[in-house]
Length: 89
View 1 (cartoon, one colour):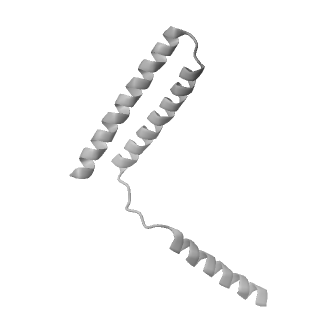
View 2: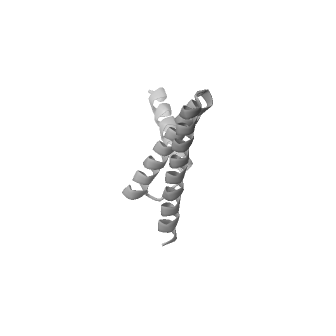
View 3: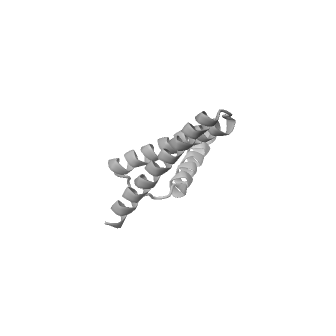
């Protein structure tokens, strides 16, 4: 029986510690969540294309990959600009 009380105390202490460790964050709006998902997807695509570019030997294929990477960079830049303009208002 003493063991049961002891484990309850430990449980409560662990809960209190986990509550203290969690930083308080402001809730993210659905639009911001969508932008974050899109940004993450673009970054993953860019990473994949960069790996393909490093492995590619055909000059035409490398050129196509360079253009694709440049397009993704442009999309990321425009996404960052939209994010910056909405955070300033």
